[in-house]
Amino acid sequence: MLAIKGDIAIVTGGSSGIGEAIVYALSVAGAKVIIADVDVDRGRCVCEHLRSEGYYAETVKTDVTDSKSVGDLITYVADKYGSIDILVNNAAILRDAEITDISDQDWDASIAVNLTGVFYCCRAVVPYMIKARRGKIINITAVDGRQGFPFAGVHYCGSKGGVMALTRQLALQVSRYGINVNAVAPGDTETEMIHARTEEERNYMMGRIPVGRLGRPEDTAGAVLFLASRGGDYILGETIDVNGGLYMG
Image (cartoon, rainbow, N blue to C red; front, side):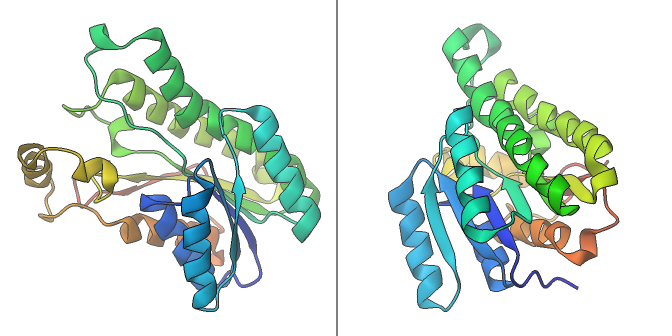
């Protein structure tokens, strides 16, 4: 049910954190994974580790805020492998600020990476999936796009809410071609961004979560694997919450 052996998958921002866990999950399940990331050195380290364990992955330097860079990535993967079966839009940046402290540049950067980057990747890959009459697109959003969070700025929350809306509308438009579009919304997760917070902030976060712990990157990766597999074939336009009960919609 969860096997995706032989599928070609692209994971943006796959060199660390949740993205790295997604790369591992898809690789172990049998996919050939392309890490699309600006940090190629870190991406290559992930690939080397996977190859040492008998799995396949490669890294392609990609800036999701640059439509040409995204277009070059999609063309390269399609030409080399003959198909693109799975796209996981994971690349994102987190910014904290009160609205009066958010500069034009801060706003533009958050929207560019977190929302426009998703749009660029989807726009570039959809023609190949339409031709193949199949494909899975999984967008990584965040619980902060559904509800407020004391430490996050409106630029971050707004961009993540936009990803949910984009997911629903794109799913409506492309489902007739055999393409499933869904999203996964992690809650507070143990990544470098969380570790950079103070102990007081981390304790506050854990105190809000019914299961009593922060999420792990593997928690989100498991949901992505399910949606990418045959198990997710009848799920369309949904945002799957992976947050330990922090948000129950």
